[in-house]
Amino acid sequence: MSRSITQGLAAWLAAGETRIGELVVLGQYELRHHLDAGAGPNAPLASYPLPEAARDIALYDAGGNYRPLKTAPTLRRGWRLTLSTIGQLHEALDFFYPAMLAARFAFQQGRLAVTPLRDTLNRQSGMYAVTRKITDPQADALIGSFCRSEGGSPGCLKTILWPIAPGLPVASLSPEKFDPYSSRTGIPLLCAEACNLLVARVREAVKQSPAP
Ligand code: SF4
Image (cartoon, rainbow, N blue to C red; front, side):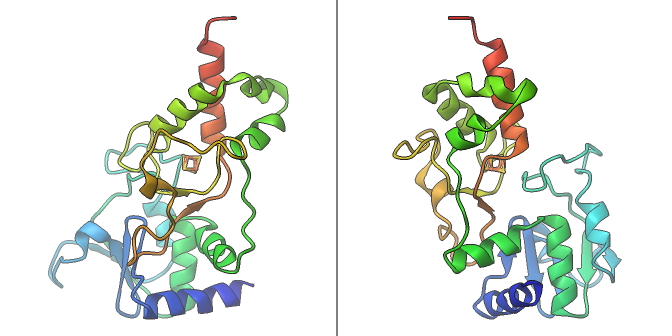
């Protein structure tokens, strides 16, 4: 499977999909923050030859704050990874955006399972069981602020594939947020199920709601 994904990555790059999230792939195979794409050879970018450097770069933002959500638009600049093989590039991208190439590959093959938010919340237990009590309008507003691409708290670059419930789409974000092909030059980051951070935020919202 991993080898097939690497082959898929090679095909996506050959088709011109050189952007993924905040990253850009230049040639074979240099990886940078896309805002550093135009920096010349003498630019003060820290250079790393191995994919493992991506793990450390992705850990903290430019202000030194831990990044709990790897797809938040907070990746720091000022570095380049000069990798030798497509396999190393695959590895580095998995450090920056865990499981995202695999999700894209599964989506392309029509076998990416998508879970509505209600199903995710209904199977929560213990201290998270209370998340089932969130109303649909509350959930919609929360997703609109928490998952939006342009920042917020914390903001997220993923394309949302799930509805609140079957037949009830999220209405608080623009249509591009739900379109994996809204950027023709990039490998999309796909959200097939609400993450733990959103579930935790739902819990906070329910706890803060006045009792009925
Ligand atoms: S639920 Fe999905 S889109 Fe929203 S913040 Fe989590 S990973 Fe990003």
